[in-house]
Length: 164
Image 1: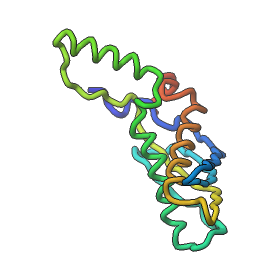
Image 2: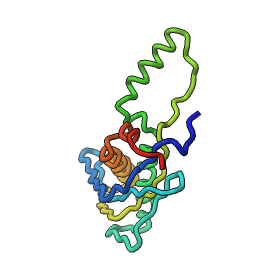
Image 3: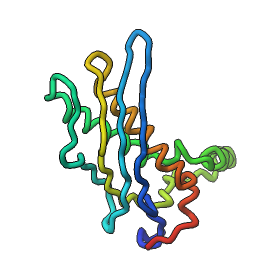
Image 4: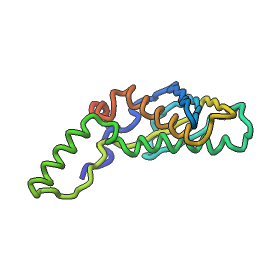
């Protein structure tokens, strides 16, 4: 088993100004606009913060904490399931299929090849009175994490970074 100290960390460096505008128009329209920063931390884990003084014009204001929590949930969902975004996943699936066919399937789980050590700060948010809801903000969070991962060259891009 690989020691977590030797694994590369996400993010390997600050990724700032990740902007997402999620807008879907149909029977159930959706709108959420966010800007987040991904900061590396010394400790493992995922921390989500709302920037001090962040104001969002939206009524009812009581819904905003739920929207912010949905952003965090979307980011965390992507970071905890990198196989979905990893271009090498289909190759791994082929290997697992070969193992199953040959009777050598060990049933082992794929170990993550990096450590999440990030603090995400929500810097800006915009909501619409008619089209904004928790799902829209969760999708925006997921897309923001995807953009951050793309900026470092994907999860496979972490293999060239130091684990320190």
